[in-house]
Every structure is written in structure tokens, then in C-alpha cells.
Amino acid sequence: DDVTFVMISEFGRTITPNSGLGSDHAWGGNAFVWGGQIAGSKILGQYPTSFDNSDVTQIGRGRLIPFRSWESMWYGVSNWFGITDGQDMQYVLPNNGNMGCQLYTDRDMYTVGNTTINGCNDRSVGMKLSMLLTVPRYLTGIEQKRICKAAIFLTVQNANVTARCIVVDQQVIVNFDFVRRVLSAGDLDTRFLEAGTPVNFTLDATVSFEYDNPADGSLAGTEYVENVIQFTDDMNEQISNGADCTAGSSRRRLDGNCEFALDNCDQVTSFEADLTDAPSQFPSLSSKPSSQPSTSPSGLPSQHPSTSIIPSLLPSISYEPSSQPSTSPEHTPSFEPSISISPTPPAPSSKPSVASSS
Image (tube, rainbow, N blue to C red; front, side, top):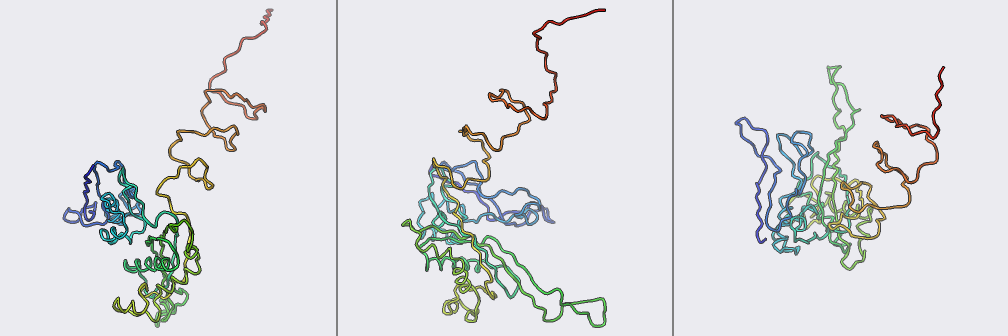
């Protein structure tokens, strides 16, 4: 019970061979963890649905996009070693703050774990940022950190909450005027885009931002996070590359109040927030039914089926005959007679038959 084994490779390998019949470096890999207190016999993360190009994480030759970071597993192992304080965890895993709530705690990995991640227990804000860029590109890792640090900075300044953040998706959209085409000189069949045709690039980024309500049980300050208009204006000010934000050293960025500014970002054009309750890390146990029942049925039948004297408005339909006849038969005759595969055996008559001969 005092030992945890971790077997891991620093990177994955391609499934198909190269020209030398060997494998090349890939990306996503896996780790095997076992020990006396490990809650084993399960897979954490997302196992590929297929190893061909139909899988969304497959980018060719068996290279898989990682579903979780390197830190996700070590976070739970560190919890098992007794590291639960935020500052201590920052020392052991300096990048854990960049992973949002996409981490595994000792509760996920061990039979004796009970750790939760601060900032991942109460509220979840799914944010979408649309930004005008001067060049078509994705956000760099540093810029993703700046967006999340800006959001956390604003909540620390204006709301008494603990938050975590991560950029989970990006999409680049190129917009230009296809109509503005002119004939090429000397060639009546060739057209080209007119010089000066306006072209702009939009980057849509999806951000997962989760936070805990204040420890005193109040909601003081949380109204700032939920004020989309104010949050949008403040985020725009923080990450837009304005006239005062010039490229240079990190010291020049700090002096110019541009710590979180993105390179080549003209403006944050829109900001949407969808506020929901964060998924619970602990299932609720209540004798009262939920005011928002699940719309998806459980994959496992209940060991305690419900009983009701009120008939269902949506009765079940079965193609098999019941082994027990109904105690309350229907009094209205059926318009569609039942069809039997075998004839019904005749019942004995209460009157004797009369035979005649000629």
C-alpha cells in the first residue's frame, strides 16, 4: 500500500512504419499506474475509438492528439504523497495551472483519495472569444496563458473567487471580398484579386473558465464574472494589442500595462459566456428528486425500481406476450384483432351435439 508504480513513455510512436521499417516519433501516449492503493481496472482519459483516420484525435499514421496533459496523472500521484496545498503543488508541478480543471486527483486514481481541485467545484463559464488578427494563425501557448491569466487577474481584482482556466479549442476564419476581381492585362480569361482587396482574419477561441464560490458561502463578487458586458470590455482592454502595447522585452510589456496583450491582435470583437454549474466531483445523495432531472437514461438498470399506482403516459411496447394476464382487462373491444400463430384449443360445449342422418 505504500508503493505506486508508474510506467510511461515520454512520447508516442507511429503505428505505420517508415521507409526503414521502423516507427517515428508521434505525440499522445499512455501510462500504466499500479499499486496497492490504486483504484485500478479502469482507463482515465479518452481511449481512441479507432486507429484509422476516422478518429477525431488521429492526425495520421497513428499519431494521436493528447487528451490530457503530462501533469494530469502526476497531480493525483502528488496528492497521494500528501501534496494538496496550492503553493506546494505549484512548486512540484509548475504547469498545473495551465491545465484548468483537466487534472486527475487522488480521488480519481486511488481508493483512499479525497482531494478536490480548488476552482473546479461550483461554477463553469464556457467562454467564446472572437478576435481580429492581422495574420492568419493560432494562439501560441504563451498567448493562451495570457488569456487565462487575464481572466483570472480580473476575477481576483473584482470578485472573491478561486478560478482555473484553459483554452480548449481554436478556429481561424479568413474573410475577404471574392467579388472584387479584375481581368488580367492581355488575358481575357484570367482574373485575379484586385490590389488592396480587404482581407481580415478572425480567430475563434473556446475557453473553459471555472471558479468556486466564496468560502464564506456568499455570492459576493460573483456578479462581476456573470456580467458579460463588463467582462467583455475588460477582457478586450487586457488582451488587445493597442497603441501603447509594442513588441519588446517582458519588462517593457509590464511597464506599458500590456502584460496580457496578444501579438497581432487588433480587437476582441465578441465575447460570449454560458454560465452553468460545474460538474460535481462527488455524486449527490439526496432523498428529494432533482428539479432538473437528467434527459439521458442510465446505462444500468436500477436495483430499486420505482413503484407507482398512476399509469405511465408513455407505456412500454413489447412484442413478447405477457406471462401473467392483466388483473384489469380493457373493457373497450379492440379494433384490431390479435393474430395467433397456433389455433386456440376448443372449449367443451355445455349442450350436447345433435346428429341427423338421411
